[in-house]
Length: 125
Image (tube, rainbow, N blue to C red):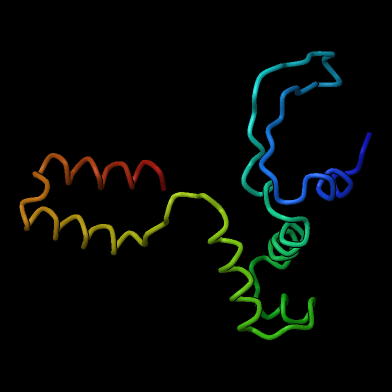
């Protein structure tokens, strides 16, 4: 089996999809078109950076020590990685409540819509 770094070097920054997945222990194969998960789409050096960040339990101080870089460099690198990923924007709960109430007050949404927005936030958290 090929190592992921080999595959990553072949792919570069090109978009890819997986067309066959095999579950070895069950001798089952599934064919179709599957996207790579967001973390797997990152360049290998960014994947390593994220893995170390998780191993450091999110401690920027430990990241500084591990990589020998400054606090702003760690923060900028993390910001670059987050910006490159297509996750939904995460807003603090207070910001969402304020924004929803402002839209309700301005007549952009009604009470039921505002309840739906806030309930969806609660379900997804």
